[in-house]
Length: 359
Image (tube, rainbow, N blue to C red; front, side, top):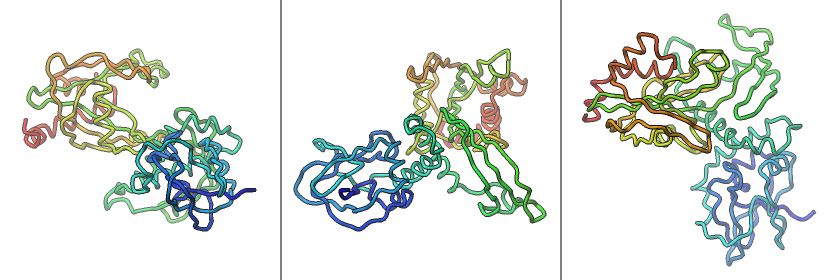
C-alpha cells in the first residue's frame, strides 16, 4: 500500500485526534488553496496544485475512523509521486492559500465526532445528506459547553460525571433526529438512579427575533403553517410568530438573526437587543432559543409575503401596534410561546430599549 499523506485540514491535530490518526511529519511538493469550510460543508475541501515549494504533511496509516469519515465526506484520494493524498482535489488553485487560521478546526472535529457516533450500519450517503443539520447540532453542542450555567446560586453545579451513560442509539435521523439513552444520574440525596431509558428529540439552536420600530411603536409578526399544531389537530395550524430560524454551522447567533430577518420578512435589523434565551421544552427537546428584539424601520408597506423558495417557505407579515400585541397575548390569542415571551419582555423593557436605540 502506498503512503498516505495528510495535508491541510486532515493534518490538523484537532481532526486527527478524532480520527485516531498518528503519523510523522513530512513535506509534500505543491500548493494548497481554499478549504476554509473543509469538514463543515460537503465538498469544501482544498485544492492541491503543482507549484514550487512544499507543504507540511503527515505520513500516516488509514484508521477505521478515517475510513468511515472519508466515506461519509466522499473524500477523493489524489495520487501523487510521494503517496496518496486524501481530502484534496486537483485544480487551478484560484482561491487563497490554505490557512488554518481561516478554518474552524473545533467545529470540524465536532462534526467528525457526530459522524462517527452514527450507527455503523447506516449508509454513508444518508449521513452525508444530513451534513447541514449535523453541523447545526455540532455547533449547538459546542455553544452549550461554553454557556454560563443556569440556576444561579440556587442549583449546585453538576457535570458530565453526574450522568452515567450505559448505552446510546439513534433510531431515527432525518432533518431532525431522535436519540435514545440508557443512563443513570445523580440524585438529590447523593446517590444514582437506577438505569432508565430516555428519548430526546435532537434539534439545533435557533434564533427568534421580534422586529420593533420604536418610533412608530409597532412590531412585525409573521404567519406561517406549523406542523406541530397540525399534528395535534389544532383548528388553527397557521400561527402568528416572531421571525425565527436555525443557527447554521460556523455562524454566530447574531449573524443568524440578521440573516433570518431579510429571508422571512424582507427586513434589515439595525440593532439586536438580547432578551430571554432558554430551552422551550427541556424534558425531551434539545432545542435552545436565542431571543432578540430587533430594531427596524417598519413603514406601512413593510409587511408582505416572503420566505425562501428552496425551503418551501410561505410566510406572511403583519404589522401591529405594540400595545395590540400585548393585548392579544394577555387575551390568549397568541399560542406561540417564544412570541408570548418576547412580547411581554418588550412591554416591560420598551422605554429602556427606545432610549438606548435612540428612537
